[in-house]
Image (cartoon, rainbow, N blue to C red; front, side, top):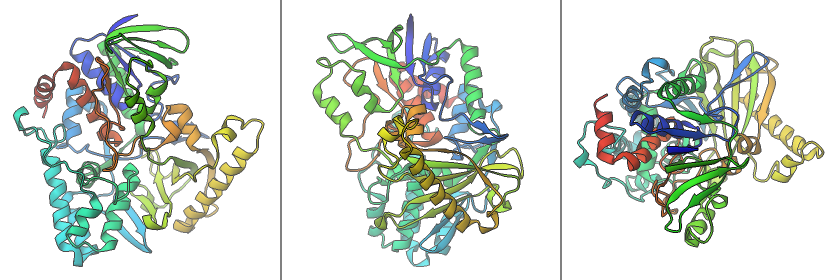
Length: 482
């Protein structure tokens, strides 16, 4: 089968890239290893309760935000209905025995930090000024710039921790900003570049929201638009080998079940380490494989879903985090409500970081005959429930467990290496990948290439596709919708 372009993976980055190419006249094939598009976005139902998986809440969807412009360009804005989180506290964070409530709005968040840490006022103003400046200077986050104004001068390897210490921030302030970002991208304050932190936290500070039907709402809008534009989506099609010419030019690929697809360009949106088994040896240089192998990933989640006929009012539009101090290696724990379309009867999602090596991959693969996997899983569930009841004692006896997922569950359904929550770590000590690699016509996209989250993966789809269509051409197209 011949196409103009092939997109491997049907997460948000892949769906975005495919829709852009279709709008520009390409015949596009989307290949997805799961039996339905968007496996990490799609909700599932247990005992009559809707459970969110990969989309719990996001930033960037206010009417003046970048995603408003991007979704208008894609023709999707009228099909989605963002629901604002609590403006006074979209996140409530327990850290070091203190509770910090983070409000929506950059000015409100700045004021909240000044109330939390009055001795760190210089650092706080510098921190929020940098965030605002970064959002203003970043293409596809701000559209009030001409193409010739693009710049990367604001990017540097300075970490969040180094920046805040330079401005004499209190340790508690560094821990709060750092651990909050860790919950949203999996990188600690001493590792994360400051500009990257700004791109992650800035959109949440501007305004956090969720959706009445969770990830289904966005996914259904995409799939309807793709169908209307003539996309061909091939599910249950796992890529086996990518074919390159002797001159390292993309020619096509074959799937595990023997189907062959040809095209002039291909966008790979999966975890980049999966390319180790797909790309041909002897044509691609060994240095690229070694680089892929050496990438450090973010940690994997362990998730428990509960059902409850009634939940505390404070949980309806605020997420609750228990974040320990990173140097003590204390786990992150989060409680979030699913299905914002209902006021009381909800599933609750408990998210923690999985314990290293438990349960093991061998135990998971032999789970039907080996009880070790389920024993370890049950221990993790009990730990999560104990933390949940400590945070919400009024819920004791008012809920029941309806499902749970280990890192291996996520790896199985999404293909993410080891089930890592946010893919490759974007840290100062690790040289990141770019959309363009040495194989001509083969491009990379997704959270491991640019930045994670709904906003990051969608922007990644635009940035990578611009390498095919032309940077200035796509930029000028999108700016017409601001």
